[in-house]
Length: 147
Image 1 (cartoon, rainbow, N blue to C red):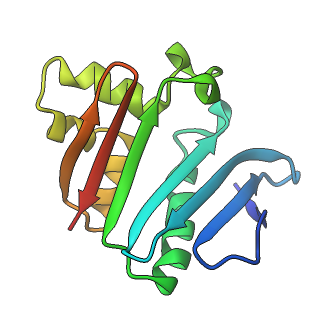
Image 2 (cartoon, helix red, strand yellow; image 1 turned 120 degrees about the vertical axis):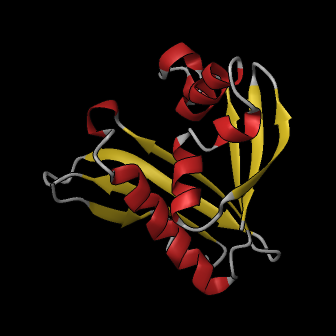
């Protein structure tokens, strides 16, 4: 499958934002990332349902990670997952990461569950093998992934 990225904001160095396009140049998702001067990366990846589970999320996340890592060395990846209007079109009205995390923590330790999410799996692939649970509730979770 051929995909391309349309740069939504080419002028900034501390943030990247792309619309993900399929072979017919139709939008199938988006990826954005922001990095601060301390090397903390916050990212949002949205892939349309029919294009999920094909590796596009990690490929898109990696693109933003690599570009921002050239500006400031990334030392932490923040997973900030919510249940709100932004995710009204997702299962149970929440981010996929939050759903996976909440489904898991009833039986497992939160740290283990953080790595069951897409963000956790991607962070681990990039060498961020540790995490800190900053906040967790039925409405949101914030996780720091670090080396």
